[in-house]
Image (tube, rainbow over all chains, first blue to last red; front, top):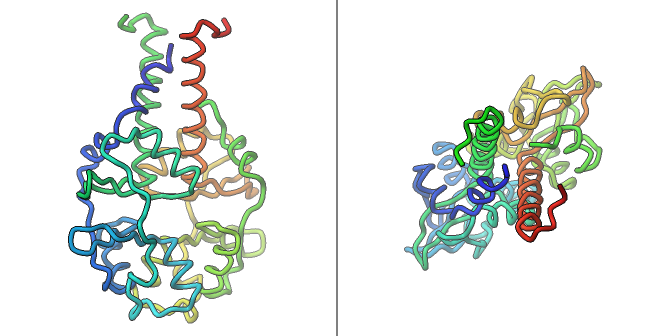
Length: 156
Length: 147
């Protein structure tokens, strides 16, 4: 049954993915301007920035917020603070949330980033790219197992 | 993946969102927001000359301190974008998305533009396939799996 391994892997908790990507989440305070945030995301090659007030997550600012709430609204990115245009209280995952569940939220709600929290502590951020990378690896592994199975070398 | 690129395109419905090269960034953003898409193709007549995405707005316009109303789309779009052929396997698209960090790819049917496939479309298909396999496994365990 080729699906067994795949289902197991998709039930893997999100913390495994976070460990794999080995990239700590970075955050900025709500007073950061849109231009500063854009430069920071560019420097780190990511599409979203978490907004923290002290050690509390208060929002997320993504490319989509930029298009809708800044550019389309005609606001000046150099003077607009994130507090004015960020998405407040974003949906978060916990460390044991299954990857499949995060993928479902990405596709149903059309999100592309999700902060991962452990209680009140920020653990990291998972992007749609991370999720697809994982799913692609699972598929490759499954195809490999299927090949081994067909050639008779599949371990029982 | 059992799904093909053409099946993914059919599922999302037809329609390619395109603009002409002569417009400004602000005008392109208005189109993207109106159609709720993260990218537009830039067509000169029926020739694909570029792609413009949300990431370009972030990186090449706002981070660069340019004014979207004063910036010509052609100066910040990605020229001659990588495309995929409609007959290629979805795995190839997944590789391009994960390795080259693209999120949108124009799909060509021979030399004709057939649509755009996004990372969200592919993830949706993968999630759907996983769900179906999980259902099959459950049926199999319950003894109802068709032989």
